[in-house]
Structure formats: structure tokens, C-alpha cells
Length: 337
Image (cartoon, one colour):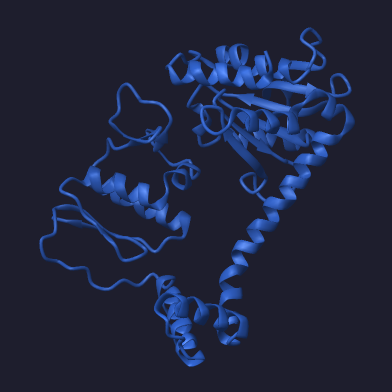
């Protein structure tokens, strides 16, 4: 079987609910299987080093080149356990202490790749994450080969690849912080190309060409709206026909207010972006966003995720406010008695 075929087989098992029962089973049934398909030797424990000792703990796998010298750390969690608040931080700490250039956190289904020797906190050093049950298996195989193939590690190509991808992530992060400033400057400077493009598109839609002054006034109005949206000020909500419980004003001034606080809570998280919220690693007894159903605590299914809803309304309000603050979203949450 090729690596792609192994991934397809793993995907099929996971989708059927045939989950490895614990971390040891994830190591044996999924991680070792993939490592061996990436050309790592099966019976040389100084190269594929299980339970590699580091100060204060052990890493599930160290992939070593030369022998006993780790180049990759792989920390394995039970399926769904990758969401633990300290999982990434623990792996990062181990890798940083040994100067390991590639670190991987996985629960068999999700794979998170880090470049620990980069700059920033551990979240900023995350280069890529993928889910074997989503996306194209061939593309997932290419990514695994890019970072973890034994021959690529030996040749130094894997470390060069993850550094290159880390540099691109850093560049994209810098770009995203400067885009609003770039837009403001284009409007302030009445950029001729921008005015021409907007005017041309308007003319194609209605048959009449606006003046440069009209276009500029419109662009400035957009700039004012963006600025007002970031000021965290909201107009008084319409108080008529409000349901009791959570009453949420979204960043775009949309109101979310269902008959039950659970429905409101879930919809707000979905509108903010369940992936964005999941990456905050919020917990209330159990992870706020999980990939598996908990036997005891109430959850609401949303796509392939489960949202923890077994809380009172005040706690839901607090959680939404914390999420909004972490995501820097101008969210307003009220409780209607």
C-alpha cells in the first residue's frame, strides 16, 4: 500500500467510529503505520526512538538523525485529546529544550506541525495543521512527506521545507496586520487606479459612470464604517420582542437572540468561526469545542464538532465575552430577564 492508501484506510476507520481506545493504540495503529510508510526503519529504536526522555518528561516519539539525536518530536494524544489546553505548550517546551527543529502534535486524525526554533510564542510557530478525515489524501500524504520523510530528514530538505513554510506564515501574518492601513492610505491618497476600477465596475453594472468625487465619498464612507466597527460601540438594540436569555449583538450589528440560550450560544460561536474558537483551547470542565461526544456533559453537534453547552446562562455569557476578547471581535452580550 502507498502512503495515500494508508491514509484512505485510516480515514475510513475513523469515519466509521472505529477509534483507537487510548494513546498507545493511536501510536500503534496510526502513528507508527505512517512513520514506517515515510521510510523510517522499523526495528532501529535509536532512530525511531519511543518514549524519548527529556527534562521533566518523555516524548512519545523522537525521529533521530543521526541515531539518538532527535530531529523530530512527535507527541501523541488520544483521539480528540489534541484539544487539551496544554498539549501544544508541552510539546513546544520539550522541543525548545532540545533545539529540535520539527515538532508534531497528533491524535491520529489531526496533525499539527511546528517550527520550534522560530520566533514568537508556540502558536505563532505552528506552520500547518491537517485532518486525515478531511481534504485530499494525496495532498495530506505530500505534506507528511514534506516534513517527515526519512530521506528528506537525512538530506536536510525537511527542515528547510518547514522553515520556508514558517517564513511564509510569518509574512502572511504581517501582511494581514497592514492591509487595513494599506486600504486607508489608498483612500486618503485618492489612488487613481482604485478610483478608476470602482468607477468602471459601477458603469458596467448600471450603464452610468460615477464621478471621481462620488467614488471617493463612497470609499471614505466605507473607511468610517470600518473604523466605527473597531471602536466596540454599539447602537442600542431593538428591545421589542426580545427572548429571555442571551441577547448578542454581533460585530456586523446582527442580533442573535433565540428562545433558548443554548441556540444563541451555538449560533454565535458558529458565526465567529468554530475553527477560530477551537484554536483558543477554551475549556469549561471539558473542552468547549471537541471532535467527539462526551458521555456525561451536554453538547451540541455542529458539523464535525461538538460544542459544550452544559452551562448556565451566566457562564455562557462569560465564555462568549472571553472568546470575543481573545478574537478581538466587538461582540456585545446581554442577559434578558
